[in-house]
Image (cartoon, rainbow, N blue to C red; front, side, top):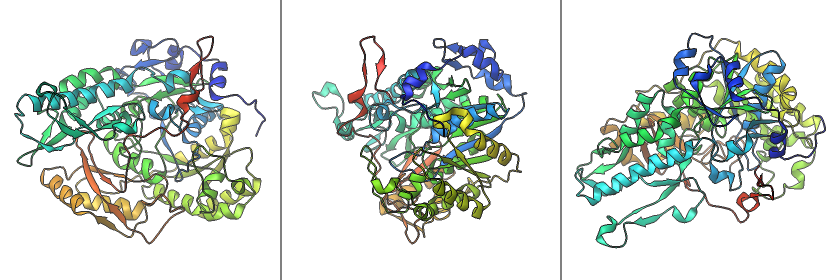
Length: 568
């Protein structure tokens, strides 16, 4: 790994020689009249580009996933960007497709979602803050429906909504734990109908999932109308269409459905669009971005949230089922530190110094924690997709620890590459790019984990037993009742999205590696009819984060020149 100055991601981005966004689009075959510029380096791409590009060759489709994440982060976004840049160093053209930043995490602990080091998307400030306003559009559309629901109650409740069965809350793109549970409508009789409700973060909104899974403007309008806001007193679902809220939502979201085009600091095209929550929703960027990007080069490289048991499983079984696109390869990102953490020998807390023992040379610990990597490789292969292991290298890794990971890869018959893209940009990812290019040429045998017409319980159990390694599933009485009701209401054909901890393949965040001998406890089941899935909640899932004792917001400011400082 080469030695690099200790520059922040923001400083590196500001030194980059970016090209005008119309030139980036031109390199992809996208005509300038299909762009809506937002300054010199950002543009929205018209959905007409889908039809305009459909006669061009189809790119190889690659998803970047990972081992089960630790509080350290394993660098999926950075690897996605680095791999896309690396393709140009081996004579191939690639487009990256990533999710949009949520300002809650940006101002919290996680930081932004632009990548990092010398493998990042730019402009850095725009990407990590408002970009083109899509997050705000989702917030406004969601809360417009919330207001319409409460207005419906105030003006007589024609649809006879059961006040205890209203599922539609409100959203805000801020980490604010005090809003998780609120009582609304207090005051005089003119201030609405009092009832208990709450706020989620915007990324957890079903509207965000709808934005990410829509294939066209008409499809988005249909999905918005299908959102179930509650149940009436006779037990029937009441939709956004029923309360006449879907049309206004579609108008608010019309421009937001157009994906955003940016570039890496090496001028590789990056489509940045939608940011569904990785725990509650499917955690993948948008289908329309992929429908455009799939015809813009030799490779389209996209990223799925969290580990292969979560984001990649949902990529395969939810996103690909809707888009019709078939993946050609999957990159499973790992780090030495992550595998040591999965040995169970270390306790890592976000925002605190790493345990010194974690940084000591210990290839045996890497091999023990490698059980997690083995299981995540198995999860990719369950879907008939060829995996490639990417070792995201850190300067304090030891060669013996990389050797240990290569030995695991060899025992599985899987390609493995060590990549230094964070420090070296695309040049550091050439070994990975070569391995992915080879893997993507292998014949695809892609298959969904479950058929669409299987019962919801069968789908949940398929994911739990085959992907998570559970012995079975235990449903609470409330979850069983909800599943029965969803089947009776005609929602049995939906996909499933299991909301569980991202820190373990199991539902218990303390279980590391590849746990066995446990059962998945389904506490609650909720419906996202517009998005097209039911989600089973396993454990205590927070859909509205809170700030820590020292959030990143404390360090973000403007300097004396009006420049942003403190973003990372």
